[in-house]
Amino acid sequence: MNLIKVLPLFSVLPLLAASFSMPTVAEQVKTINKSDLYGSWGCQHEVEEPNTKMTIKVSYNINYVKNGTSNGVGALLFKVGGMPELKYSATDSSTWTLEGDNLTIKSNDINFKNVSHPELEALLNLKQILPTTINESGKILELSKTNLKVKSTSYGEVYSCLKVATAS
Image (cartoon, rainbow, N blue to C red; front, side, top):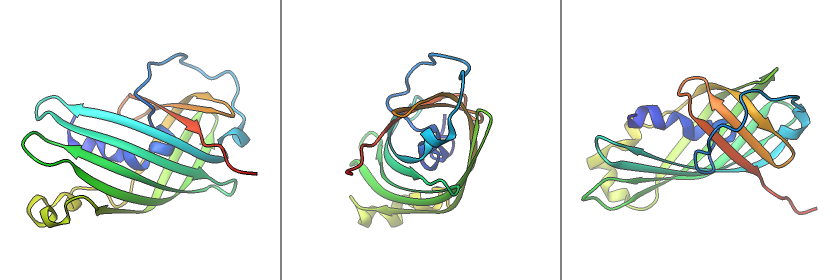
């Protein structure tokens, strides 16, 4: 898995996001209640590229709105041997659709900012390889009022998110 393959998952985290790459519990959802998707989800994911030993950690919050839009904010942490850990903040606005158990996200605008070592940005030029838009889909394996688990159509990985409690 390379950086380009991993990064699209970031924007899709609301959809494909990850609490720790949990194993698949079920291959098929019994019923999907679309209204369970509405609201804010907290997602985390960690991936290591075995050849380069680059570790990418993603922490992301996304809000799915009933009108088919979503927005998110999060952080990406890159760690490569011999270099300081790089932290990027990220924001995203997207549209989403749910057809049966297939969740599709189309990103309209993704923005990344190097917040840990901006002086290294010119040297590393990571912003040049970070996506500006993403189209991704996944099969919902679990959707409840508190859990979202999706299997990426493109990558085959399973990602999980937990519903974020909101103050009433």
